[in-house]
Amino acid sequence: MNEPSFQPTIPLSLPPFGQSMTFRLSPGRNPKLALERLSLGFDHTEGVIGIGAPFARAFPGTIPGLRTFPSLSGVNCTVPATQKDLWVFLRGNDRGEIFDRSRILRSFLEKDFALEDAMDTFFYHGRDLSGYEDGTENPKGDEIAKVAFVPPGNPLAGSSFVAVQRWIHDLKWFQSHPRHEQDNIIGRKQKTNEELDQAPDSAHVKRTAQESFNPPAFMLRRSMPWATVDEQGLEFIVYGHSLDPFERVLRRMVGEEDGIPDALFSFSRPVTGGYYWCPPVKNGKIDLTALGFA
Ligand code: HEM
Image 1 (cartoon, protein in one colour):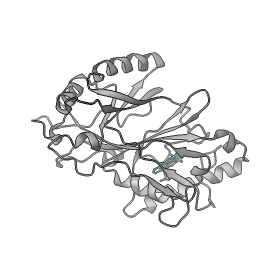
Image 2: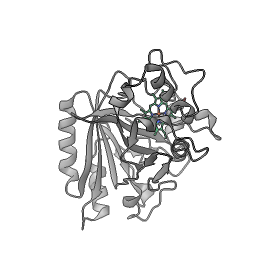
Image 3: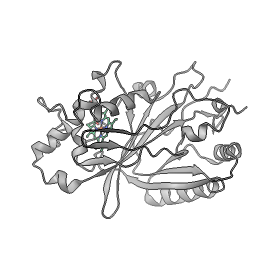
Image 4: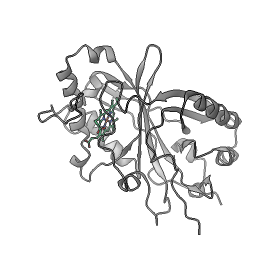
């Protein structure tokens, strides 16, 4: 029997270029037909597709663990929820490939879905635009599948869950501070990527240390920088076999445990936030059995 597998581009390393898009079902459209067309038309070798809880609720099947993104706040920081029906991430080797893939995708999606938002992303030497290496503590090798996908034997086997947040950086503010203060915000040295021995409690890597959670909050981060002429930041994209590890870390980042917000908020703020279920793939198509499709 052909077992469902995960969407094949999720575990891949970052592409040179990407595009992160959200959609909502257009008024009066039939959700079932929309999802069938999506399953037929989407080429899962070109990117990832994720279904949001508001859209999933239109179907008889339920996806345990899928929910809408929470809106949170802490001392001087807010985390907004901008949950949508559908999220698509396209990958490409150059900007031209993204352009072509995006046009093809949108030409078949536009029958049913309205584009809410799109952002081009790019690879920046494996770093966030602040200059710090991003992804160092990601799982590697066989650990990737364990962290990112629902294991075999489960009704959702091969599925993943993704959290997507757009962060806007104030790089001018960040770069106006001496390097040691920047290092204290992240908790690593920009030059060598070494963890600081004496990082403040607010340092990002102290807030997020995956093994300091009980149980550990492992996740697969696949975030990419974005920039327009006058704004820039990080399209934070994180996969997991559940949304819980991400949400526990996010809650600690806003200071829910001890009132200390993550120092990242001093120079960056999230402006979008959505949770999506990434269905598995079966016989070359995304597998929607869990939503109640035959
Ligand atoms: C502006 C947004 C963000 C930036 C620029 C950023 C940047 C970084 C950097 C530079 C590191 C250190 C190197 C590494 O291990 O990758 C890191 C680690 C990490 N970040 Fe973020 N991050 C952001 C948002 C988030 C969010 C929203 C979460 C989850 C809620 C998160 C979770 C993590 C985790 C789990 C680690 C690894 C911690 C460890 O186990 O050592 N990050 N991040």
